[in-house]
Length: 361
Image 1 (tube, rainbow, N blue to C red):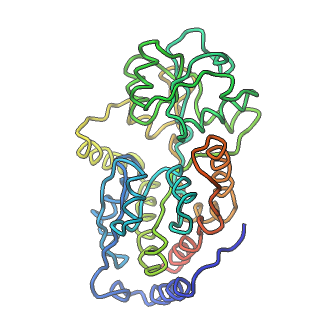
Image 2: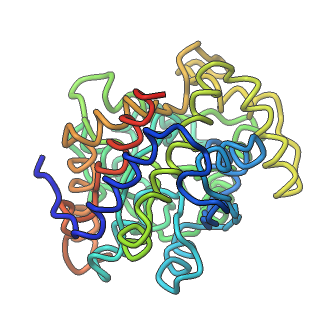
């Protein structure tokens, strides 16, 4: 993967923070913690942002987090473009769309987790047991989204495409209603709507992890990312590094005590959205579902990478490949006018400094 061209200001800032980090003083970055505004969704592990703030990891790193809850990624990107937000944690699709229309305004500094394993195809029809059974069927899906892209990936495994189906553009809540009522044949349940489907006694017939665990294997994931305003990052690279350092201390905690940290996140999520997470939902956050209805295995359902794993992933070119595959799909769909320049968008330099800092602690 090509190394990125970084402005002199960014490079000087990065070298400065590394030098300061070696001094071992919490106050060496600044006498007063500098505020960093970070947007997140009310989902694990986005909620590690308020978690690290409560733990004080941000102050340890010389910053003060202002954790701001949003309902979707595009709203976060709009806030970054208006200089009212510095960093956002979201799915990769809004980032691809925004970067195609407003190039060189964002950096992807971490593809921090992957939830593709619990993306799925669901139905209430007894005659649909495999992907091939979808041929000629009506599928309700929000077009031009990550769910639409996932559907195309799944169909591609069996030599099909969305041209073999009748697609009906429906918002996620309406899509779930359509299959439960029998008006359409299948959908890709989004987020909490999967739990609504399970509450109705359903169980998806295809899970995302089958993309890469069954032949032919598909090396394409739909990761969640940490994205930063380029304007902010170029001006304050040390604050971006400080945030990532704090965030990945939260990841360390999760690696050591998954259930304990998840319980904190679930309590926070319930507080924000005013619901109560069921035991089944909690299982989905920790364990991967099996093909057999109601069964789970010990393998984690949501893959969350450590700082060191994340840096290796960013440098491998795989993240760029995943973004490229998704961008090609959205161009074909007419969702975006052109492909973003991923050399400028995906930037591993910040994570490299985070990992170097961790080595010196």
